[in-house]
Length: 141
Length: 57
Image (cartoon, rainbow over all chains, first blue to last red; front, side, top):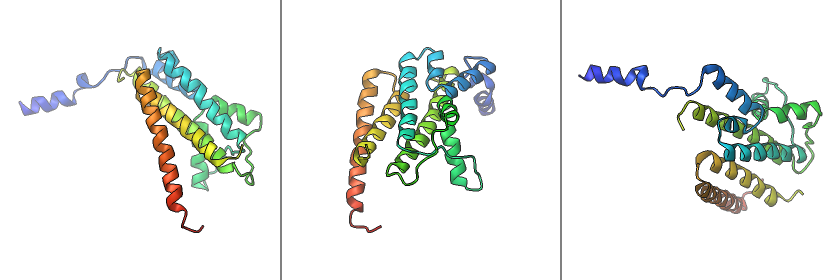
């Protein structure tokens, strides 16, 4: 009986099933990464999607405005490399900033560290938003 | 716009907003959690700043 209970606990029948196909899940995550909030909008969570769509790019823009730096992918300096990954988390705004050559950072500016904090945290928050969209698509929320 | 207090409040506002919307589905619950988180951010920052005052850098 115990063995039967253990088998049923570990069987795939008890695991939450994905509400979407793997390709659709990947597309939702990619959309959520590229455009903050797009994953939630796709899944019909309009209020959440609009808040993320506005709040996260605005945070990123404030970071640029405060003379923050978009860090390069230099993994010889681990913290610089990790900050670069965090910056990239915001998606499309990161590419736009790189194309317009903003985000060079002014180390002497009083707001430099504040700018970095806004840039890094906006990217990290978008990673959480992507995970939330994934959970919704999987039918967990 | 280099007022550190305003920048800290702005940062606390955005982080509280995103976390509240992520963690709650109901708008009223989102507002309540966001306000609590924002208040906690501000009180903690002011308290830590005050405690660090005697320490020289």
